[in-house]
Length: 479
Image (cartoon, rainbow, N blue to C red):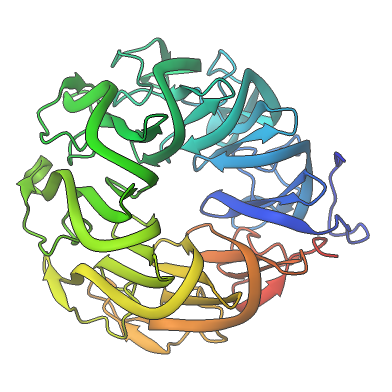
């Protein structure tokens, strides 16, 4: 079933039916795939993220928004978002994209439209086909995508300032908004089964199980033992930065990958968890925040995969910290802890990284979980019981526990801020979780959707633009 049309708050409340999954492109918006396959979106719309044909409404929140879900007009099996838009794999297998197009993010052969959104930026306010068929999508968070095609090959499009296209060139093939880019998908030359992204690059698990990476290498993101290349890319400043414009081998075999801001973690085929890249907050999890290498701006890093000493099934990273679901189901976290992200009952350590509290090794949260969702400064987990617990920052009600004043106080980069240093229950049971950075949404066991945290952009989907410290129902999604 495909839904079309746009609703406003003066219309009768829509009834879309239950949902099966949810995701967010970034701060302020969400999309859900219904059990019918149809897609609905809500929240911020300044870049046409709602795909309702406008970037000026239908409501007015902090900016243009919709306070309730609106139909996108497509049926999809999966989606990805790059911060200012989305791409979706349709039920036919073909890929459609919408939202910002300033870096060729739409993959339609131009960066000049087809519409114009806020600040005269090129965009599409409707889904547009890009001409490929895919089984998997990932966005790098900085205006680009890569897809595993139905053939198994990997194609990429969008910004190419750091060689993110993986096509062997750090310039072109097109020019978008003062940087090199590709406005159509180009081949990386590899076959893969899984993809992960950081801000300016990608890693892939090849069909052989080996892990290859490409893009920025300023903080050792390539995992090849050096930050001296192998290529030089323009970056955003044009000063010339280390990168790889083609996939290069990390030397490890893995079953899953996760990317942060400038670091990756991988679950190896043995089950062990290795990490590499930026280590200024102990993100590598190897017991040190002073190395083992030194990268851009003398930042501590690891230019090759380093062992965390744990074995797991999956990892989630927010750039400053990571959490892993261990083989036992238990959840351990490491990295920055200035908002209680470790979930270990303290925000005062156990280590110090760059003058801030952290843990340079995995520490236990005391819970067992089946999946994790990552906010800017916190996490939520679906427990093995099905319930949802959250920990970390609570300034916007991200914990969903009925308070924005605690239960703890964390340092939050030298300012006292409400948080929870241990997982607290939200009172809901869920099958799917997502975060837009300052809040979370869940698909409940019934197929209904509930959200909590920041609502400034209508991101809660509850017909308001208010924050909520408890889960509130999303209008129109449910049995």
